[in-house]
Length: 218
Image 1 (cartoon, rainbow, N blue to C red):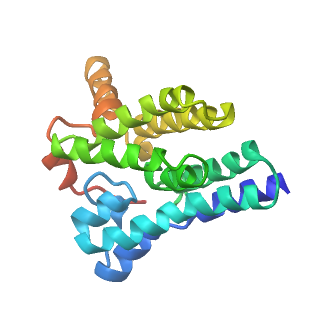
Image 2: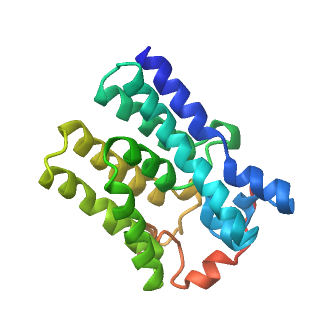
């Protein structure tokens, strides 16, 4: 049953809600626009600002459902958290879009709503502060980096802290991988790009240039 929960979580996470909205509302492929990520941010910039709300809620639900179901079925907290993290992996590397997806923040928020509700407003505040300062990606990374400390300090179960550490690792991996965007050949520039990906979640210094570029989806 635990394996089934992991599979369910991954399949739910793989449902590309942002891409479906983009194609249905505007006939575009988010993988070919701006950052190339299939996420609420892409919907906000390239489809319709209002659409980010239903897309975000559905993405949150993708992480909440397998986590809740794992607890409801009595599989235990570690199994429930694994199901929620499987949804994050599906969201980031969706089988339906050749493993090119988003960054996983929304489904992870759904996981937190179930097991550590205070984690949801914490990450939301981190995102809001980052946006206010003009670098949402920095706010997201800082919020995720501090979250394991918060769960430890508030005496949450060790499995919850481990899940937060796993989410931080997943985020770092996804940012560096960047939906398989090629890296520059020059070693110095490659290092600069990797640092930008890690901290700014983009390859170039200008956020505006990155969000309005055109790529080529495969």
